[in-house]
Image (cartoon, rainbow, N blue to C red; front, side, top):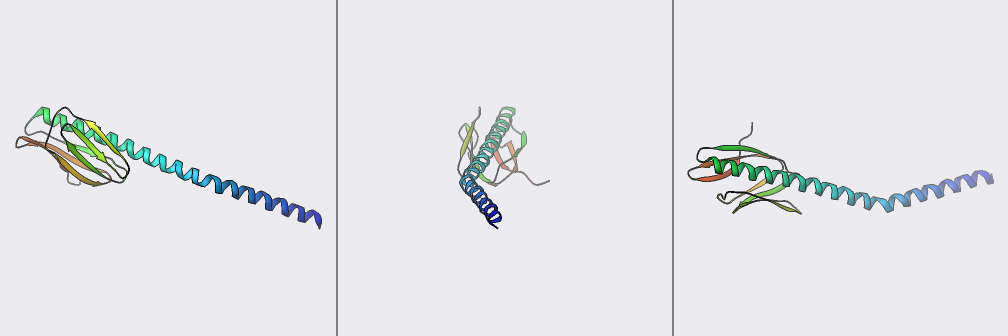
Length: 134
């Protein structure tokens, strides 16, 4: 009888130690996950800002009547805006920017995740708007 009680007590101690280990590491794992999600969001925003800045420069340099459609991939909602010679993507806890060669009219679009944007040079100005869905 004493041998069974000893095994049960040892098992109880091992389970308690394992649960204490989990309790100590769960917040760390949660922080790692949040950091990875933020890193992905910033990376997607940088790529999108650079792609949009490139399309704006193409359309600006090629002149009147030219247009480009740009796929913007974002992790969640963000604001895309252009001021002067910069394009910004502003998310919940980040802001990234990309430089352009040409200036265009200022614009601001609220996007909920990924979108297709149409960049066009019409009527003497460069515009950015959401493109229609396929």
